Image (cartoon, rainbow, N blue to C red):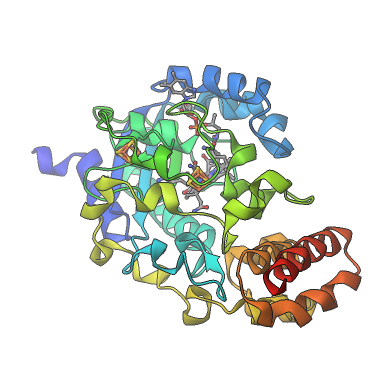
Length: 354
Ligand code: B12
Ligand code: SF4
Ligand code: SF4
């Protein structure tokens, strides 16, 4: 009976584990992704994310990483927000943290559930199938999760390059299971962006030179999370009050109106103090304070100095002269990038006074 097929039972189990989307692709189902990755890297669009380049031959295709892989199970877990992420855009005194980072670290949550699904599959399939193997991935491995999710029918890569689902919009964390099992693939996703260009128009730093192509070096997510040095001057004003990541291209996508917060995994419930943190509180953090506030959050990975740098850029954009004493105190910080950002912020706040 169709309902008894392994693929159906797998999807039912994935749903039980909190994945709102689950699809299957043949391991070779995203043939252009590798070629496009190589072009992207050759154009230098990864900036200083050297780790994208280091294992590019592993990343370019599932077989590049694991020659024995036959099928990819692509999974999505919703983190759709309850409130509009853009509502704090004009609140000068607060910092904006992107929705994905306001709760617990998704790497931990998604990995735990992927492993549970993997254990289930091993037990179920092991009964009447030859021995097989599997590996689970979320974000950090050299895996191209978006094109694989598209090939597995979870949705399509929108013009902002993220995966968009008709049912869940783009507030989806992705994960993947590679397996040596031959599973029946789903039909791939179909691009439904049409003539819409809302994400491109909304991008504050014009980070898409063309639709479907992102220049990470211009993206606020890259600039505030991945980039280690001083933030280039040309982007400082456009960053506004974003202190960690950016949600704008996702927030304006019309498909997100179907992304009901009710589908969101409760594990990603935002921590109250990370929804609209006061810049003054962030600017006052030393190393120990930073580790305490951001324990268990993906934000802890960037360390105190990058966070203070970001908060200083936001302070410079805040129009809030009350932040001047705190900004001034950071002119003598032990970190040169922090000192540079403090200098810039102070010059902006001084202009206000004048
Ligand atoms: C590197 C990376 C980044 C970089 C670069 C982003 C990027 N677009 O490449 C930076 C730091 C900027 C970033 C930012 C964000 N990221 Co990120 N990131 C990744 C990571 C680790 C790898 C992505 C990758 O392979 N990039 C390389 C490029 C070449 O691949 P691509 O984006 O798929 O490129 C395709 C298109 O550009 C297209 N293409 C290229 N050229 C051409 C030409 C034509 C003509 C056409 C039609 C198409 C086309 O084909 C390419 C291959 O499919 C993945 C996790 C993973 N392991 O996959 C998470 C991941 C993509 N990020 C994620 C998230 C949530 C974000 C942010 C929303 C976080 C935030 N709020 O700040 C932003 C979104 C910014 C944006 N608009 O993309 C999620 C996305 C989930 C989803 N629903 O899609 C992922 C999948 C992590 C996860 N496991 O959930 N990220
Ligand atoms: S995350 Fe922000 S800066 Fe990056 S592409 Fe989207 S709108 Fe532009
Ligand atoms: S905002 Fe429009 S163009 Fe961008 S991903 Fe969504 S539907 Fe596509």
